Image (cartoon, rainbow, N blue to C red; front, side, top):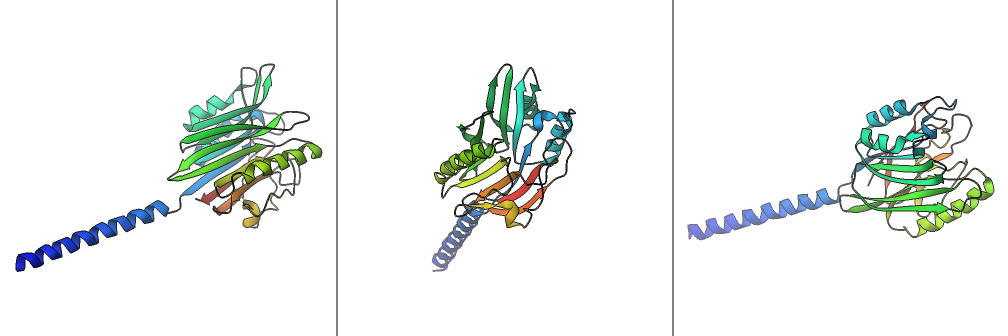
Length: 253
């Protein structure tokens, strides 16, 4: 009789332990992950006066300890320098590079660096009247969640940008209900994208009045996130290594 009671107590204890473990495991699986992300137009590794700043930029990015870094106006050529590969080596991160402008010893465009594994890469060209522009869609996996990192560089003319923004929005509609982050140099103040599917990180934290361009009075660099992502912090750092300032944010996915 005692043995039967002990057996029952033992089995009940095992069941409770298994249930507790499974519950804790499930909680860990759904627990949000904090990601630090930077967007920065590095102006081909020069400041607003065209003085070289690439080593300072690399040092800044290394010290930032960011999980994702999206760069615009970055080069990979013997003419300007192998900036993309130098950054990859120094940062020790996974890389997705897309050259919007290629030819005459030019290889210039966008680079997305990620501490997370990159599981898919797309380089989308946008309609461009002058210099070719486009964006990268870099898909990473954060735990069991696929996240699209959209690194953007738009054109300089109003007419060109209107068409490019429309093309970008059409692409983003296909990602509805996914996790996505859109960031980069939009070359225009007062941009708003579809509020039904995304959030402006700066507006969310009442920081949309902070300029991101050192020789203008506008915020022309942006960060938008899908509605299923929470913005924890957003700031613009006053760094004189480019004609733009870097955007730094922490998000929860």
